[in-house]
Amino acid sequence: MVQVRVAGVAMDSMGQHVILLKPLDDPPATGSIVPIWIGAQEATSILVAVEHAVTPRPLAHDLMSVMIQQLHARVTRVEVTRITDGTFYAEITIIHGDQVLVIDARPSDAIALASRVGAAIWVADAVLEEAGMPDMLDEDDAEVSVDEFKRFLDEVDPEDFRG
Image (cartoon, rainbow, N blue to C red):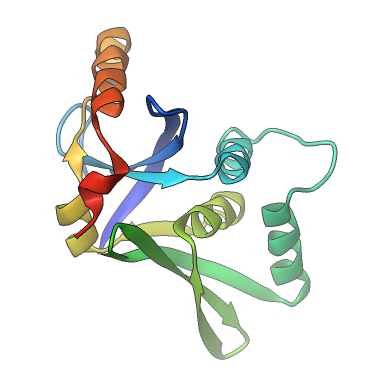
């Protein structure tokens, strides 16, 4: 497993939202980034959490966070565990008393929840190997790198990740 952070949310040439996960140990513009295609609502929820934005009413992931807290439980980590036929799978690990609960989830929901509660996000080595792309985001030369990444998103197809 490799610990990652949310590097951003982008849109591909088809208008689909893509969450970008970057290994914590990778310096900018080296290593790889894992793109996962997600829905518009999930993209909004993740952006709200990552940017610490305030919404007029709680979103679904805010509700999940409050419910977990009210049950005196905590999310310790989320993991993107595998890709099967182009679909990413994830698990949420919750501790409640002396119980460790591992719950199947969509990666977008797991990441949205982790982003709210400060839980670590991990990606399985096999997922990073299969879905990882060269990281073209460079904080020092952001404009050029963003243009390069947009070109990449224009050319990549989610079908490229199907086994």
